[in-house]
Length: 374
Image (cartoon, rainbow, N blue to C red):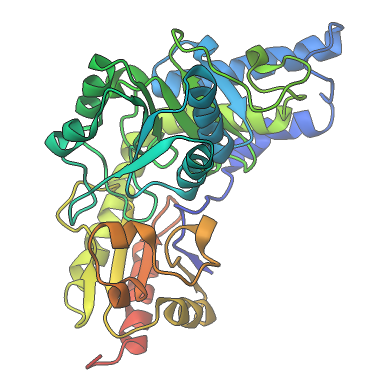
């Protein structure tokens, strides 16, 4: 299989798996236990916390392990809901469902939720954002990198600084960014940041919420007080250790990984530009070096995805978290892309295992599947 869906998930790196295996067998103790077997596991968990903290440039005490980016996003919204009376809340128009849905829940509980519009490349304008802030605004959530288009919100620090001047709590979903681009917490200016292991060759089911120490982060679930009382429940030890190792490798190899996928994407997009009826979405925006979202005019994207699957090629129709939904992508609609064009969109997201022959094979198949005069 040719796997071109790394924004959905990545294969666990063999070095990550090797680090995890002892904690699925020999070292099975509960990290909250005080005897030696438990203390050994606790030490490994804290080492992983340091590794994740180093990836985003914070102290280890600012990292809370969760079950993934979705839970981290939900904790951020729960924190806003607990710290403030219902007020005005701003979210980007191209956010992931794990931001849109918690925002909708807060709206049902009396919050006034407003989406921040984006331009045709999926970017938020700083001046437009500033005009949306009201005296009643309490919370802002803007993703750093979009999971469908790969577009970077390059002015995130400006948006955060404007928000801080008004006393707002700022959250960013950085799930697609960490390990792929520079993603230092203090540089971005946010109060809360969400991460996930399985986007950087780590295991599924583990993520983190990074927080500024001035924020009184509120838990979603209560129990034994694990993770500084923010995320109760016995820790997913093996997953956390895998996340730590994946973060360590991402820190060390970020530049070489980026160069590799950039070479592949340059070849991909050069050839795509010659195929009639194919448009690269957000082509002129700064994007992740591994991500290309295309629209194929007159083609059903889901049908094209299945035809490619029959050829042994795995791509996505957008966000894997909403791929069962036949409605047009809210991300693309927010960018002003016509509805019929959104239904012909597929996402190619490259990874470390991919090669130039795989890119060429994909292009060969795509040429055969798209009518010469769509």
